[in-house]
Structure formats: C-alpha cells, structure tokens
Picture 1 (cartoon, one colour):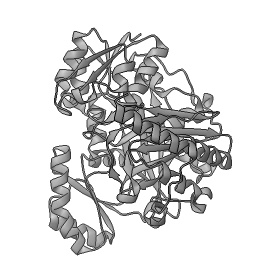
Picture 2 (picture 1 turned 30 degrees about the horizontal axis):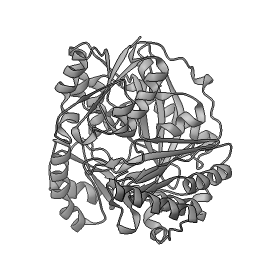
Picture 3 (picture 1 turned 180 degrees about the horizontal axis):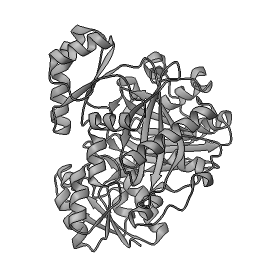
Picture 4 (picture 1 turned 135 degrees about the vertical axis):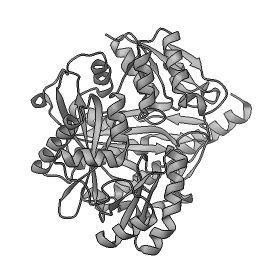
Length: 472
C-alpha cells in the first residue's frame, strides 16, 4: 500500500487529499509557493515544503515536484485538479522516477486531452459525438466552409483546451472571422498549442457528466451522473447529483456510455465523461476529464464512496472494492462554488483578507474549503475559496436545506457568490428541476439582490473591523 503522498496542488483540493490520507494512515506532503505559506493545506499536511517565491512556476514545474517527492521519501504523487493534473509529462516523469502517479497513464491523458483525438476514439467506440470537424482545422477558409455546410451557430474550440477557455460561439460568418485569430491566440498562450477544431453549437443543452472508476485489473464502474448545467461562460457554478432532469432509462444509458468510453481508451483511476443532451434528448459526447473533478463531493454524498481514497487504492494496484450492482444512490446533493467574486460587478474577483469566517453545519451539510478567519486570499490563483455541499432525501428537501446552509455560512472581508447562489435557489425554474446551460444568461435579474444583514452579522462585522484595526 502507498505510505507517503506528495500533493502537487494547493487550496481546498489539497486539503481534501490531506484528509483522505489521514483516514488511510498515509503521510501527506504539501508544497507551497511563498504566497501560500499560511495556507490551510500547509497547516494540515504532515509535512510541507516551499517551492520558492514565484507564485505559479513551482506548481507547474513537473521535474521539481517529482524530485521533491523522491527527496522526501514519497512513493506517490496526487495532482489534484488544475495545474499539472492533466499533463502527461508529469505522469511520465513519475513513472521514470518510481513514483506512483495517482491518475491515468500518460498515453490516456495525452489522447483524451487532445479533443479531436478524443472525439475520434469515441466515434470508434460507437459513442455519439457532436457534429463537427473530423480533426483540427487547417485554417480560416476550412472553418468557413465547414460552418456553411453545418449551419450556424458553431463553436470554435482549442484542441488542447479545458476549464472553459479557448472557446467561442459564432452565430454567423462575420463572428467566425473575428473569432478565429482570437481563439488560435488564446489556445497557443493558454495550452501551448494553436490547434483548434469546430463543433455544431447545441442550443441550450443540458450538461451531464458521469463519474467513473476503473482499476488496473479491467474493472470499470460508474457512480451515476452530475448535472452541471448551471454555469457562466462555460465555468460551472452549481453541480447536482443525480440530475433531476433525467429519467431512469436516460440515466442507465449515460452510465453505459461512460463505462464504454473508459474501456475504449484503457482508462485506469477516477475520471469523468461529459455529455450534452439537446432539447430532443439526443446524447452527445463532449469530453473526458482525466482527473478528479471539483464537483466530486456530490457524487460521494449520494453514493457513500470516497473517490479520493479509491483513487489512492487504484494507484496502489488494488482492485475496486465495488461492483456496479453494489453502487446505490440515495437522495440528492448540490454543490455551490463559493467564489471570492462580486456578482454585482460582472463577477469581478475580490481578493483580500477574510476578517471572519463561519462555516455552516447541521445534517447533510459539508464544507470543503481552504479559508479561515484572518486568511489572506492571494490574487494569483482561482477565486474559488470554498465549496458548500448539501444532501437531502428528495429534491424539495435539498433546496430547503441548501437555502438554510447558505444563510448560515458567513464570510466577511471579501465579497462572495453566496447571495447569488441564494437567488438561484429561489428561482422557480431551478426549483422545477428543469434548466439548461443558458440559465444564467437568461436570468440577469438574479444579480439584483440586496444583502440583508442580521443584528448578529452587523455586530460580527463591527467586531471583525475593530480586530483588524487593532491587529488582533
């Protein structure tokens, strides 16, 4: 069994992995840039080592991270999500140095990270994909010709893209001409590759993803689906498991397709197969994420499976502890990404010192976070500072519980998306369980909330301001 893991990440996901290690009796090793010296993952890990003053370079230096894993006696490395989590070079270096990479092999990461190669693999496996280019586009002329054949709107996408970047919708030829250079430039800057491809734009789809687990002994299972349709500019805001929009036949079909996709590419470890469903319930493969997802806790909440612990067991060469028939779902879970952003100001990031922080509690409430009272949110990283996960037995109950938990959580010192999430929950459309990826754009009025503070909140804010002023 693995005995010591270097966590090649930061923030709440690093804290999540530290906790899994603690429960399994595994020593955890944190790494940090100087901007993260007082971060929670540094405080929680068994050991912690500085990556130097550069705020980002250390987290992106695969050789240095693996060298540190070897030097500190680690036998495994967990990449978390973001940074190098889907970088095949990191997995290759780990293999050369005798460090177990907690994720799939480099060949699979490379193949699934190339969106055109992934689409080709899915076609070969008989999995439906969105209409589009067979491979990378040779230039603007080919893009224009293909768009005329398919019909607008279309999507230009970076072949090596992810995280909602390198994507542009084009509604006509003029928009496509304007977007071409921008997407190519963004793809090259963000992902190191100028290759782009095209897909037919699916109007107001539902975004559904399926969590899978696969071991090195040929066993593959799914842990049901998550609904990620509530998103802004291709960035997820709210995630739900299971989707309230599917019937049992659709749910079973998506699970079968996800398992088939994993088998088709020889997948090992935890991964996510993402699909779009159009208005006629047609299913299209979107992409495969070869890593742990931000929203994995909602799947854990409805199945009871600790996905991070399963990742570690799989990386150790162990068989899955579960067969497909062992996996049962119970109730509904919703995850809210608590971002340090101001929804009233076009979701502008709002970094700074958290003067006071109160986490919610009670039945069915979980908080995965990296913040605490007095923590300074650095401006160099993603704005997500916590995730609130709520669970209840039915859809109406989970909405009620989520409203209570969002009212309970308090973050002072920075603006957050908490009030905006409450407005989403109050929406009749959301409460009906029928929504799509156009939800946020269709409801601009949701940012017109007013923040009402209780006397307790006002007193706490005054106390926090006094404490900050006095340096307490």
